[in-house]
Length: 349
Image (cartoon, rainbow, N blue to C red; front, top):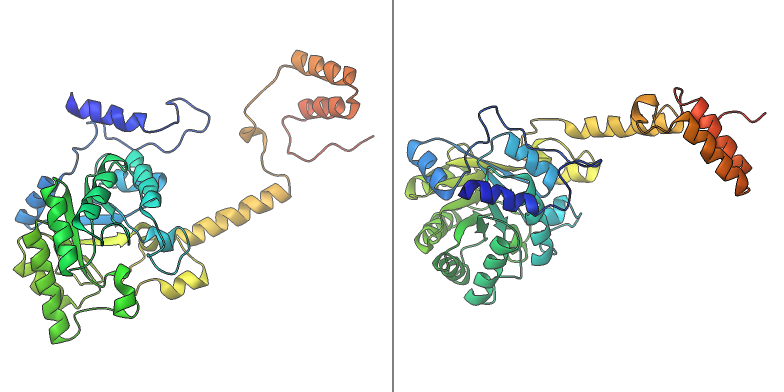
């Protein structure tokens, strides 16, 4: 009953009726019914059994549906939406309100994975109260199950601890922390010196002590990630951190090879494997669409589904004539006569 109520509540988040002309994609369910919801407890179980955890960063309803259908364990709504979706050069510009829009969209599309929402820059640094207030919004307004925050400065550790004590699950994030590029001097890998490597492990341990259920390790050498993973009792999620983490995360657009623009090719992370070449498929489809529209091959009869009877066409044409719209009446009559043909306009006699 509780599960059914939750599914109904998620359904009511959408404005789109169940039966509609503009029906969006629907999650694919097996004949045995929908898979059980992933929780923090589920992840602890996988970690205890040594089973890798899968995480994908997604930002909207269609991508969330795909992540859900693929059986991914965790869907992270990342502040990297600022760069991937909104075209900024860094993650810093995105606001909490805009992040909440992305969170809500993902929550409508993904009902199985654990949903984790990023706290964007500027919404949790000032005080623990600010951090808790922002985290509460991510769950209450964004529909997320947990939040993620970056960094290991004392204020960030205090924020993580306060959020956990408020009853909200927290995922930590160490190594390359994009929100700290002002201090780091750009998107630079971490853990490449003894001091930096030790700091990565110490920070991860501090986040565990604060109550985090998992820690993201970004852009650190594999031995450093392996050491952190061994030292921690909670799962590590690697991104550019080698194969020895408890799980892996990649951005939806990156792993699909969706972005084909030369600028994006320059900034695509070195660690990202493209499991598809969706971008070229998209470009090809758009080019074909453009060509078919320009040659009037689209829409043809099979994509012109709405009909009007011959009697009503005659009545419609007569009404147009009375309105003084003779050319419009002729156009309606000619379209009805050529309904089974392409969209080329009939020649005037």
